[in-house]
Image (tube, rainbow, N blue to C red; front, side):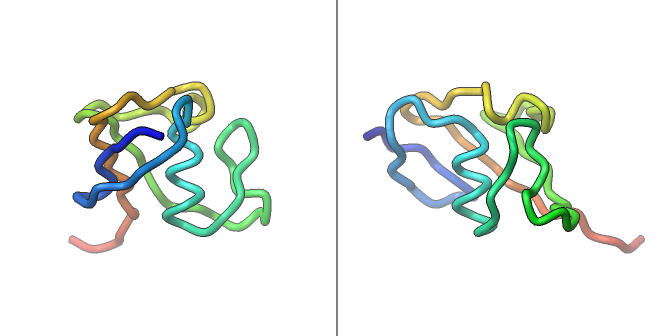
Length: 79
């Protein structure tokens, strides 16, 4: 297990975990290898690791190291 920070809170994840595992844990939704929700409904989130945006297609391959800072941001409308 390693410790990361997800949306400002410490979280322990298995070594070798990728971004998609954190997104699944935070949203409660299962994702396919391309980051699309298996239920077919829009997900509406973006992810940054250590301040760098991770494209959805790379979520399953972007591995997290100890101390990584993950931000899962929800899209919002407004002006």
